[in-house]
Length: 261
Ligand code: GLN
Image (tube, rainbow, N blue to C red):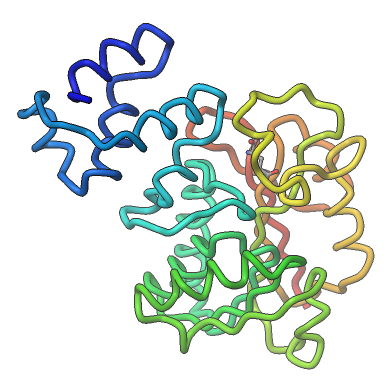
């Protein structure tokens, strides 16, 4: 089927031209610029299956198997949360803290696709101890670390919070995380139904992760930087005594806790 026929058919169903071209590019191996200039390109039949999947709400990033983050391309697949732009803000703040305080050892709880851990290692040269409660994210993070040649900077272990790195806890200077913070029962856009529940949902008020983390760990002498939901800032300030920073959209998005020893 020719690309221009696909575009007219699937645009009428609600897909954007950009998505159709990206999916066609993924399957044909031709660049999107080439396809834009050659809409008469013949696309293989499999393209129809992928466009139908996208129409049902299956995320574009899982179809393409990749996502852009902090100016780089990262592998993503089902079983890991798709990185969001807000998390680039978390990384930006973390990079600044690492440079200012000359931090050498960072921990990342719930690595997901590894965008935070790999980007911090690349941007600052720190070593990152990463955990996740599922194996798939650890595998995807390792692949991304290898792609960018920082696998020797990232140590990955399976488990909750920082339990797998108990013996190194005292050395950790900065703890970062994009934990699950969506309230259970929140009506979700259909794309989110394909993402791992354990990466999204944080209990009835979305705060289970933070409550348990700050109960389990004494963070005196460390810096903690975590992504939060836009309506959770006040409660988390009360719970932790930390400060809350805003994202690009002006919404409360990052919790910073710095307990001096
Ligand atoms: N920001 C994500 C969303 O609302 C949630 C990510 C998370 O819970 N860490 O889709």
